[in-house]
Picture 1 (spheres, rainbow, N blue to C red):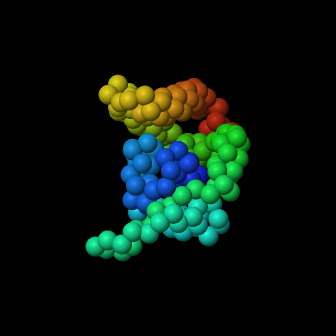
Picture 2 (picture 1 turned 90 degrees about the vertical axis):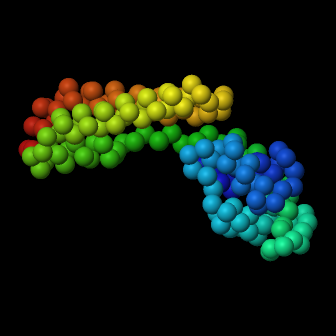
Picture 3 (picture 1 turned 180 degrees about the horizontal axis):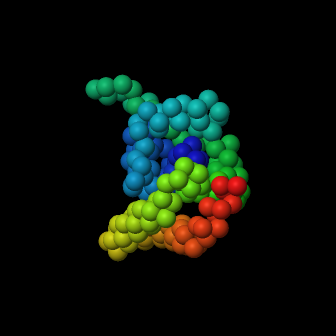
Length: 175
């Protein structure tokens, strides 16, 4: 995820905000599993300011350091629009860690079927956890969980297919 574009989009949607408010808005909408660190917000805002995509809309003095309020510039709005219009590159996982582990298990004489079974159990455990989370979540959380569940289902299909072809794969990798 592009943190800078996400913060720019939040500024465009809500108007000028302090870094603290941007972090809170990000975490509420997108940071369920990975909240932003304050340092990440402020370093990103500094970079956006330097690049002319945001400007300081005001500075407030308080009991601590000065609080800058950031506003998106026209260039920032254009940058968000360009980013939103570009499709994300699909990730084909052509050289996955799962595949590497199976091949290495076969090459080193370990039980690749057991490795696949262990991985399958971990995928199913996570799928159950995401399904519980989805049932209690709002629409955004449900969509995030669905996305993850669909990827896990594809991995499970691959694990089953690989298990069915394990003898043939073992023969090929040991040649």
